[in-house]
Image (cartoon, rainbow, N blue to C red; front, side):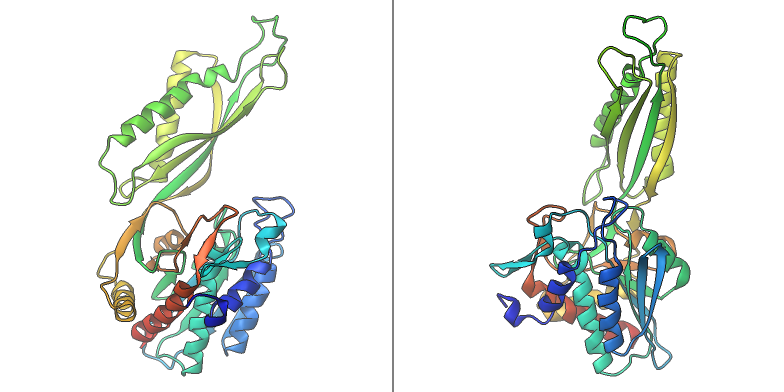
Length: 380
């Protein structure tokens, strides 16, 4: 397959990409996910699914479709997120180049969403499975995963597949992360009054040194097969003018985690840096807030959903399925923490969050075929 005229999935993906679903928590005034949720709901209803649209945040609904089984089989969830990060107007005008589709969200992750919808329609056309098939589009993955959290509280399938981009490989483990905001407090005064002013920026020096030192130490540890743990200063802002001591400085920190690490452990690391800063200068005062914390995921390789997906993949591709890990955190972590084993498996693409984001069109259709075959094997 080289173009959209050969693809079953690509026309649906074009519609999804053309519908702006920018996460409004990332971009104030962003369109939100309601438009895409409506497209997903219509597709599932047309296929005969029982469909529910329910706001998780105001005007931002999850959409969940269920195809009831005949009984006696395991239930399976296809879960995709419907939000995207910011793009210019051209980002929502999908285009085809050399067998690829380009546009905001083609790879992250409307391509996988479209493939799951096509697989769901084919399954419904072939008659119900023994177990339930559930297809969900959830909000807010790009920020705090409010949609996945709400979904995990509402349903508990036997297993799930998250069709994020994976190059048609099975991702059975992935890293976690923690975002922190540290606010250093000083005292504003004129620059010519050093006995009155307290510099909230320079007092952060020991913390910044601590971040650099911790990252050097992390670089020397045994890495996971798919990447190493790390920490870095993400953002910093403080002060208002040259001739004044800065009253407040805000430092953003990201800690990337691998199996064996936790966000709570990362928080303790930052708190130790703050204690060192206090020891270096008793004037140091700061508050720490964890914005988001997600632990790494590592599935048992004997999980039935992994075996079913690996078998379907090898049968369709004519070679053993590749199983691997990935540093990037995904909503699969929310489901796994809720007790639902969730494998990541999706089409081929890259450059997400950039103007050149792309997905391979042929891989979209392969992904849909493999998802369909997996559901038939797993649900019975």
